[in-house]
Image (cartoon, rainbow, N blue to C red; front, side, top):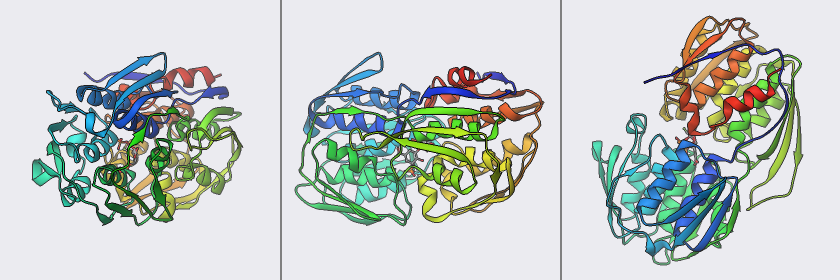
Length: 431
Ligand code: SPQ
């Protein structure tokens, strides 16, 4: 049953929040901890529904994972120690769980079956099943391995030199994880633009030698992972909602603590700067090979800009909230080269354009992005929907902070996927 949440305009947003752990890094910490030798501890792990799906899948493969007050411990079994699951591996709503786990399953000598919710069933999987089959895995699924449910029998992989047609960390990571399981062969993935490099950084933290340059990543198979302690920085994709909120709500100043500022993820900071926002980044020292900072954002006078090319993979998940930001900027904002948005939890070009139009934004869809004209006064008195997509839900909740009438948000519980305490944080800042 879908739930509704009534959202009210706020006068201003002030205060400080600790951004919850990064989703991409939390998934990887569970997966790499599971295939490492020894006990890995993870602090500031994200207790979102997606990461808990990863925990559940690896438990089904015999890994002991203990969770106590935000502290997680994983009793690694080594790559050869995973057990054939007696039940299906249910990934819920999580594309990262599906695609990265496929890379691990491709190399293990047992059968497994991967299934998810109806959004996962619509997301393309050939981008990983095709290269994994080229490496020697046996994988089947609807439309020849394009869609879940997927059935995998792994083992006996060979190295691969792969030119990925898309900039995707999930594709790159799946191939590297399969490449780790070859017998001393090299695997190289090259992308059209560099995608997030959390896999490469975290594999190093687990003692694996990984090479990276501008557009490729490579490793040699047969290396084992040694357990370690991982600190998960705050998720910049979650911080993005409050960065935009701080910039567009009048008289606001928000301090966001412990945010990961890995340069493959900081496109949102570049865009805020390009649009003229008042923003300060105060770096701390690195943890687990990931840079971290506190970020201060204040109400800003914004101007439109053009976003495309190399910048897109650095902010792909932030585009819904950047579209909202653009409604409050003077002039036109063009978002292009972003057709990947069509294969996320929803078609995010359609859901962003459709939902923001309902509250009066001047926004239209293009083939590979959208065009937004501002500055527009957003109206309320409307029912909007997350369409089951956490990022659309949070973007609409931030939009409601500046609508002149209340907004009803349908399917607000989708937000639990990546930011379970989102509404607590929003109300703690609301004055
Ligand atoms: O895990 P999922 O569902 O794919 O999550 C999303 C999100 O908005 O949270 C995408 F819908 O993030 C992806 C991101 O878009 C997480 C991710 C990762 O952790 O490696 C990489 C990106 O996807 P891709 O396809 O570009 O590799």
